[in-house]
Length: 448
Ligand SMILES: Cc1cc2nc3c(=O)[nH]c(=O)nc-3n(C[C@H](O)[C@H](O)[C@H](O)COP(=O)(O)OP(=O)(O)OC[C@H]3O[C@@H](n4cnc5c(N)ncnc54)[C@H](O)[C@@H]3O)c2cc1C
Image (cartoon, rainbow, N blue to C red):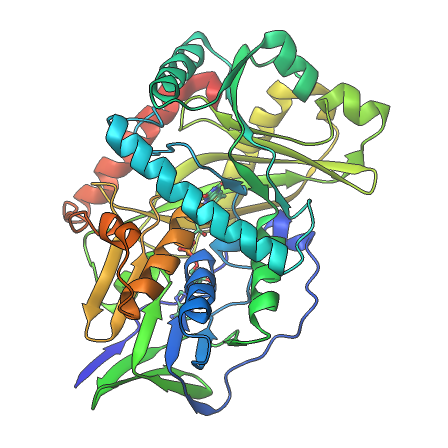
């Protein structure tokens, strides 16, 4: 018999702007009975929901249950910047593309497989263009170093035969209304999602065939006589196979301890401002999306709906050993967001932030997922290495394939990686990782 008490449950730090402006159109159901199923999925983010969709494709008649601690759209999957990126996006160095040609090509092929899967779901579940927009993205450079990083990124795209377009300062001004940027590179394959709408739309679409229980944290997971039982405060689910889509919380389930880095990312969203002449002058076209040329810089997105625009900005990372943050920390990061916003868009000085929040990423030192069958009948689709809109989608799909015994070349390639390697013990990990982050942020300078 195996029995694990779940050590910690997820916490939402601040209300995400994406969730606040998203409308939920289906009821919350809590787990308040004891159920059996063919499949239990824990976690309703990109990984968990994608695993459920792939399971439905592979085993259309099986009974699938998803259990989520919070509500769909409130966790990290609903509070990110919404860039589904096809091209390399390695956050652990300041250069996105740090691998050789073969690994770059494989990464793009895998990312595109996940994006195609998401696109099919978006179409089937009737998501709007505002929720799932295949508009591409720009890597924006505000410094000479940023321009250099962009050139080196373009070189790696060129050698892989990938389309990309250089934009000069005037073109960047035309798009964003800002004089801040010296140049950019546009790549067409990224999809921009409204993350809370996407996750909610996905869950709503699935809920026709899958039971989704929210506000039902799993506090204990045990295995007896070949069956797993997951316990939540008001009910239990028993199933022969369980897929964990809980990202960094996998170590609270007793797996990969001391191997995963829990990194907080921080973001703020402005109050709405008129999209008319003021909005155009202050911040350019109605919709655009910028990644920083230096991975440690600021991600900035403008959205417009019903004649009102907003800007969402993400900068700053911290490594923390706790799951909840103080309001003071969020306020401090919001101040940094304010400075980044105003230096780019001085005319928006009077537009306050309506929401500031944080969410937890999970990275491994050797940039590999925490993936595979970790106990008999228990599968992990965790550790997204920062690009979970895509990587967790893929991990969920692959976990469903592995668990159903469905062999494919995709799965073989996906599983061809070592385990996440060990981190130094605390407090050395905390000290070392935060020092590296601070130094990289300092080096990013005006890109942040
Ligand atoms: C500010 C910010 C900006 C970001 N921008 C981007 C971006 O532009 N592009 C990108 O690709 N990624 C981005 N990310 C990262 C992205 O959001 C994550 O990689 C992604 O959410 C990971 O998805 P997931 O499904 O693996 O995990 P999660 O989204 O963390 O989902 C795991 C789910 O498991 C649930 N859970 C955990 N423990 C339990 C339990 N005991 N019982 C039941 N349920 C449980 C949680 O409540 C959660 O809903 C950003 C993140 C942040 C915070």
